[in-house]
Image (cartoon, rainbow, N blue to C red; front, side, top):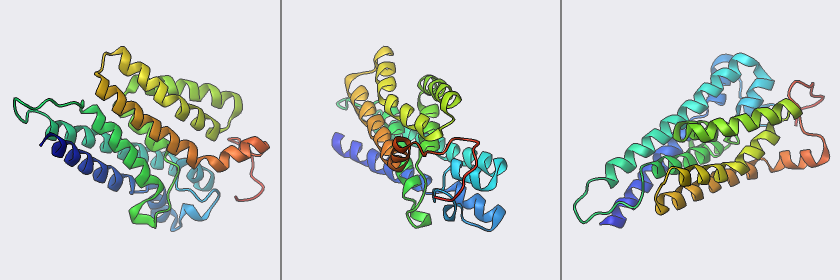
Length: 230
């Protein structure tokens, strides 16, 4: 029964995270406010950066609030599911996973839903804001440290994608250090760190075209004029 409880919690958490992630606020806002689809412009992504370049600050702020909000909702729901299904099921039951593991699992599938949305033809965004919102909701201290690193990088280079790649790579390391420092058990540390590594790999993989442009010195710098859409 122990394994069945864990599987049920994982399946429900994954499904709820994916469905919430599939709600693309960049697309919804572009359709409602501009009768348009942001994915037909610029990079073709539904994320905040492309919304900002295409429609301006108001649409970008609304997209940010929506994408961060859905990730916060997903991780809180994941934590609740793990807590409800894996706690207090009998004297013989030894729950190996802290509810925070449900939050990390929900974050992964929320990012998957954002990049491959069920409701929008499986064409979404890169999931950086979704991952950032999840990190903020799960471990605010880790998020604050990574945000500081991102802001320093952005102030120097004005390249959003580079900062996203750097903090994605650092995320599993920062989470591992934080979990060990607070004395989390081995199963929780292992599960959470693996989840963070998967999230980081997803972000970096979805930025592979940006990595090529960074190598070529042609990546977009925030505030510069673009000569053509890519």
